[in-house]
Image (cartoon, rainbow, N blue to C red; front, side, top):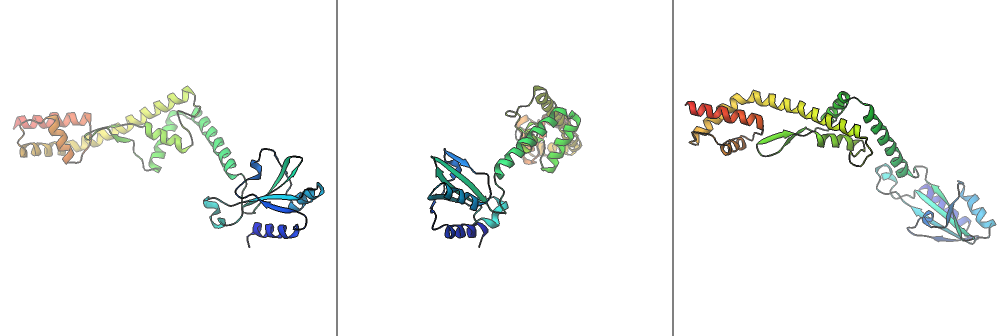
Length: 265
């Protein structure tokens, strides 16, 4: 039998002639306004104190784990028993916890997260732009993300800001809600711009390498479709068929070169 279930049954049996045990289903005794928690750990001492004060009713409630993965194997076991008795209009309470349960875990976790957030904000204040770029690039690689964001069917640009915001969110920081200094906000914007420049240079280098073959294919495509001159709409249709997205700069080069070849022939 689970430990607190056994303790509860033994307690009800042992003190059956001294108290009436009244179960409060689904209610926490600590939530009652006029209540005071006893810091002792021995329920025998607590019940002995109630007996000496002449109390006849002992209130109690049980709590079970929620769906926290850590307590999955104890999901049907009692994690906490609360005892309470009334004396001079004050409900005196105590809590008994199962050995496997960590009381106030959510509060402790929240406090730990707040401390980590503060430490990370402090880190942002001190870290150099260069090191911050390395951290964000490492985050994108680890998360399998890309800084490239298509802005239309055929044109593409880069924006590192969503990536930077995701990097901050992973650390529990929101640039709009967390108290970041103006200096840190400017640093984040500057870093985002630098990352965008780096990524755009990579994109342009890749597109430059692909342009000769793409020009040749586009010229053939234009001839097959009876075009003596390529319009911007024609170019968009070609790139759509090729399932190719290009920066505006590379599209301009492609447009000019293809029309030059069509005019020459």
